[in-house]
Image (cartoon, one colour):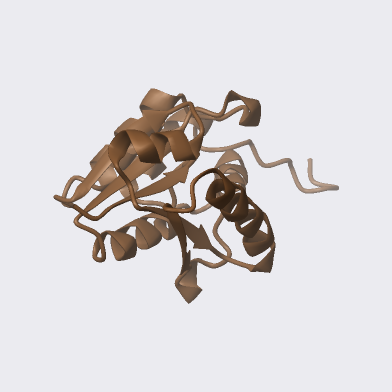
Length: 170
């Protein structure tokens, strides 16, 4: 079976993440979406919450499985018998970092290939950190994230910060 792993922090999952996952899933018999625990990043959502959001958003994809991991990606690939790692790219800055990681993974196991999936143009600006900032100020989220994620962001941030009174108004 041709199986690939699409790893990430997904804090939170964006429409851009879902675009890459959906497109990659069409080319493999099975795609494992692997949620990195990564406590160094101080995630907004607990691992279990990120798993739940992804499972809800991907429930219609029969060949996609969502798991959590806290190990080397190559070790996870060995555990699942994966032949490929899928990484989404938005910009050249993503490429530089991901290229370095792909080379490191290749050094550990040259049988596991990394495939880069270019972000669809309408998602090239999306980042989880940007979405968290928009949510914290009560900005519009519906075009950035799927509804289950928007709901959870609103629960975390409420309706956003109160807007300061305009200068000079009493």
